[in-house]
Amino acid sequence: MPDTVSRAIRSELKSEQRELCAALDEFSGTSSGDGPEIEHHWEFDHPFMKYDDGINTLSDETRSQLDLHDEQFTSVDPERAVSNLRVLVTTHSRSGETWASLDDPRCDLLAEPYDSDGFYLAVHAPEPGDVDGLSEIEIGRWEADNPDEAYGKHTSATGSPVVACVLPAAPEADAITHLLKSVDEEPILIAQWAETPVETALVGTTMVVTKRYDS
Image 1 (cartoon, rainbow, N blue to C red):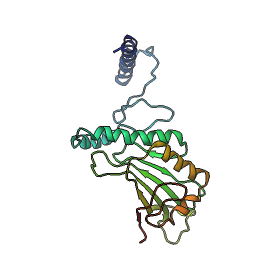
Image 2: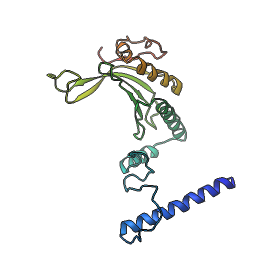
Image 3: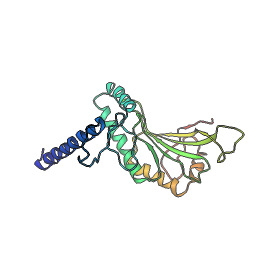
Image 4: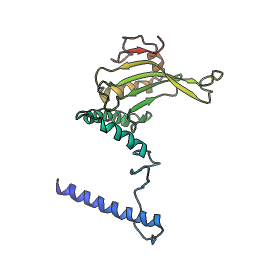
């Protein structure tokens, strides 16, 4: 390990030690009040450095799920899982309005532009350890739970898949970014894609519909 890296790690660990000791003193009521300024935030359920308003990552539940999957991994599964996750993280970093679930065994990206008439686009990565798992693009639509309520004036809604594109190979981040950028620029495009027949590519893409849920 390069000396500069080693020194940086030692310095960070010393800072962590000072701040953690100060936090423990404060928790136990023995703090003198003149300790170092606390930059990191520790919680029993979320042992993760938080930023802005925080993120709920590495909770006990998430770690337990990851442990269960890890026990079933083959030697190539972690590399494949990291590769799939990297695609979604890279795409998400380029798509500011896209919602992401990246701390769940099945990672997702979700795009639902305001003017898409209730349609949404989801990108699903295969779960780690699923040997036959493939990435999937889903076009779905939100439907009001109360049939007497019109969508847009509803109190609650449930998403239902309309079409799916199971991808024969892991997608590149550029391809998914292009997909999300297209619906962001032209939201009604999702509704048009929802009409695509099986074995036909979504307009403007090479992604072929493999299943319709209404047939």
